[in-house]
Length: 436
Image (cartoon, rainbow, N blue to C red; front, side):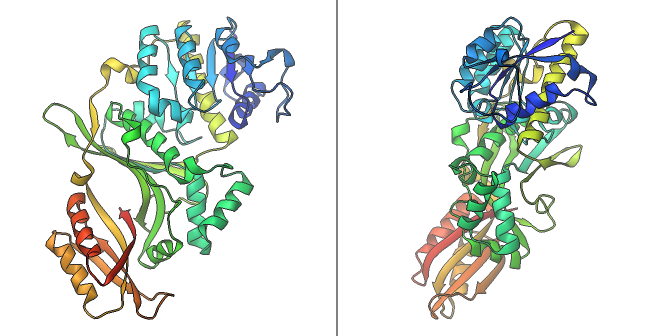
């Protein structure tokens, strides 16, 4: 039984999907049943990495969605619009959808799930997070019986490549970013990656799956690596840490009204060198899931690129194809995406969260300054794990003091930092990073 595939987009990922579908030998037997029927592209005359019959190409994505020969719509065009509208149009036509679009799912997942519930079709999103790493289905199925305590990960390959080279070579951020762009690891406009937005999209999706309810994407505190100073990477190394852009979602308990209280954030973070995520280098991604009773489970692999992402897309297509082969229909709604089954989830007030911190202070090199800094922390109940003074390349009268705290309520830490800033000897709080 042939299953018609409509492909929206023939860029890096779309070409990878088409290549898999066109070369079924040695793959899962169901791949041979998948046939590209229509493909929407922006420009019919543009050179492409894969040859496709000209009669299946078109510039009208709505024609792909509405084509009666298309049984499954695959959206790999990216961006918010027209991708969102096309996904909804496919659902309205009663067609299951496979998408790699993290931005759409992070912002409009609730709307899409409600539409899918109404029409009884699947919307599968494995490729939206982690490239070739299987994480969506494990969270929905394999780990579904666990109480998930925390999901944390390195889920942006561009920033991980940059930070890995900064740590290994002592290279400057701007130099490594330029290399990443030349190698194709970073876009010409890298803002979504280095500013943390891409990782925030992904952790929004993962937290919704892990805790059973959507959160507001725009409310996620997000900090990227674009303002990270190389000296902090160096100091972290000397103190036994590595710096990674970490996205995390942590369950802080359930409120009296049943709302799940979550701490979800993205930021450059110090990881002890023995932490499972600390050894993830280059463009690789890793996602660490901590739950009861499973304990710690880590998913590791290539997080982006044509091959890995296309692999995840085709896996979702095969999932739907297998259901169709067994039942003769689209299989109904994925129950874990049913809007009626979602919990209420909410981000907690940032001041109430518990966090360890790395702080770098620029101060005058004066007797007693470390003691006064320690007193400011102590007055707010902030326990210090280590405090170290480093030599600086600036004035002889300057010093850099690096403090690593124990876990403390964020509001108490902020109060202590305000008091430290007011000390006449403190010239600047040069860096403040969370620490796991």
